[in-house]
Length: 168
Image 1 (cartoon, one colour):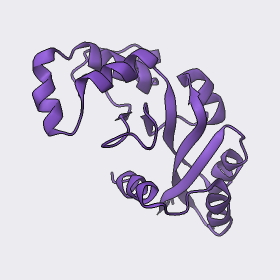
Image 2 (cartoon, rainbow, N blue to C red):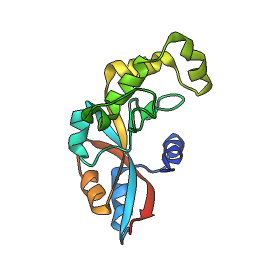
Image 3 (tube, one colour):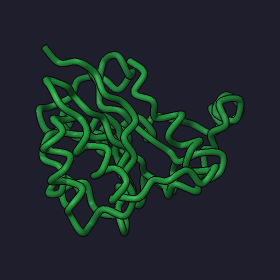
Image 4 (cartoon, rainbow, N blue to C red):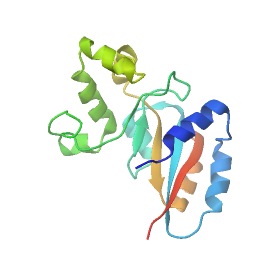
């Protein structure tokens, strides 16, 4: 599923309006049975538990680096652990993208570095993000009123609406 995150990250780089007020104004204009996805950046990096307090619906993707990271912030989307090659997961790991990411990175070896470079990823940077284990931002999907409430949270620095889909 394309959530528009790549376009939103490009927009950040190009200086497109990503303010919380702009997102809130967009949300006020959204009506009907829809699901809205927003790219959210926090005022400061938080533990996953602290970030979850701002958005209890679960994260589509977490960003474990700042929005201005080159070539792009390290991110992880929670999924079935077996599909990601990290074996079985307990219930907590299934709902924790940070723990999944940490588990997956623990399986990487130095000889994986060339393949990661071909994907514009740096093994050292990834390991640094794992050690920190902090959430800098996330993709959040919910009803317009839920995201409007989120936009009022003072822990949110930037918010950009990246997708709106009909949710019958």
